[in-house]
Image (cartoon, rainbow over all chains, first blue to last red; front, side, top):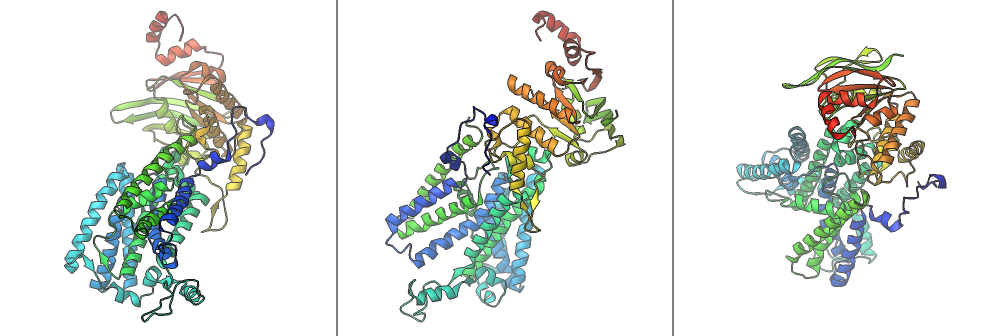
Amino acid sequence: MTDVIPDALKDERIKPVSPLRRALIRPELGGICGTILVFLLFAVIAGDSGMFAAEGLMNWTVVSAQFMVIAVGACLLMIAGEFDLSTGSMIGFSGVMMAILSVHLGVPLWLAIIATFVFCVLLGGVNGWLVIRTGLPSFIVTLAFLYILRGLTIWGSIYFTRQTIIGGVAEKAATDWLASIFGGKVLGWLFTWMGEAGWIATFTRGNRAGQPVIDGIPMLVVWAIVLVVFGHWLLTRTKFGNWIFAAGGDALAARYVGVPVNRVKILMFMFSAFCACVFATCQVMEFGSAAADRGLLKEFEAIICVVIGGALLTGGYGSVIGAALGAIIFGVVQQGLFFANAESSLFRVFLGVILLTAVIMNTYIRRIITGER
Amino acid sequence: MSAIVEMRNITKHFGHVIALAGVSFDVKAGECHCLLGDNGAGKSTFIKIMSGVYKPSGGEVLVEGAPTLFQSPRDAMTAGIATVYQDLAMIPLMSVSRNFWMGREPERGVWPFKTFDTDKADDITVKEMRKMGISLRGPDQAVGTLSGGERQTVAIARAVYFGAKVLILDEPTSALGVRQTANVLSTIDRVRKQGIGVVFITHNVRHALAVGDRFTVLNRGQTLGTAERGTVDAAALQDMMAGGQELALLESSLGGTI
């Protein structure tokens, strides 16, 4: 879309914009730079630790994918102008609900998963409905749900099972068709082939000798990719995406031109809850158990990924690709410090610094977009 | 010529407060009807009823002669009544093109893979902006980089493009500089010549007299009558807006400068 403007129509007061500055106002830029930076950093300090060998690669990929799944939901919601602080509690809640239903109440696992998804997405809808009806900041409403859901999770878990960790899901999952969509692995044949071809390491001892060290890509990673692609497509290529930007940019102005702002916001709360459920289900299937304390602080980690990815906390601006890059940065730093044998508590220091830098950058970028005042 | 929109004896109560006590107003095709009034006179309430944001407590709204009750701003928009609000016209962080099409995005493809047809949207946006005399750096330029007058113009162009028959402009010039004001007033003139009825809300008498065909003055929720162009002068309008006496008193001490 670079049609040439005839000279007569050129405004002498519009300065030509350099490509650099043009690139600077793309929301993903911070994420791209950050990603390159952390990869370079860890290539230097942890390059020989196996971090970039097949096994290490899979390690931080899975961690990044976890962040990615919840970051997509948080990103779209934040662009629509709202927060969801109940994501972490929702992860704990949905995992425990699923496990109680299937292990203790004898519901088939696939039905338990579907019931949990439906219930939690509806809960997300309640979150959104309350925010819209009361006009309260979503910060407060979802903070209330952070406590309500966590409390219910612990209570429910103890009431039904007398403990806060519910095992026994693995046996049920082994034969369940739906569980494999969350807990299975794909492309196993590819890794077997790569192992045979000597491209990736294989086990040399034990009963799995000869098999590759990684036996497939976890479905969690597939979910992360699917959600990112879907989120990006929805946001940038559809009418609904335009409504998301509009709802977060200025809800009243959007309403006046006929954008159904309430519907958009409530749907985004539901999508955020959906993402939390995907995260929880994948985790429950992977561990074969649910625990009442799962997902602690995940809401903040999701928000950090989104902010690193260039979204504005005030809504109306951001990118799903950016959030995904934020998740990669998060995952690489967290696992990289482990590979580099660094003190793990330094991770938080690092994270805080990145977050602060990202927010300062974003404020500057917004000033550029809105006319450098 | 009959009115496109006619408001008959509109009243609006907010609890104990009577915001409007029987206001009548109409707008015809191709005219600019100015609604004048001081702050708190009920201008905003009145146009919000006209644009479907509020429902009237009493009175009738007639669209092309037929009594109509708007349930939402969307209803009013479907009936061809478009409103451009002073500071709520545009979303600064979004591009001109995305703003232009907001709420009415063109789509292509088949469900569920329908996508926002950005090429078409960008194309039309640039063309329409040029018609209004604004050259964009590109359709992806953020509205935040435009001046206040340009933003109003984008909003007006949007309303016109989407087939508005009546265009309500809520104080479009009140926050603008001299040159930008002139731009907006000439845009109003251009729009009027296309046969669109313009309702121009302002408290600036000079701006009103520059483009208005008829003038209605609101004071404390009541209308003080409608005057044709040429039958009133600035002083008379100013007088009616302020409710006569107090301003006369003020004016004598200020030496006729307002």
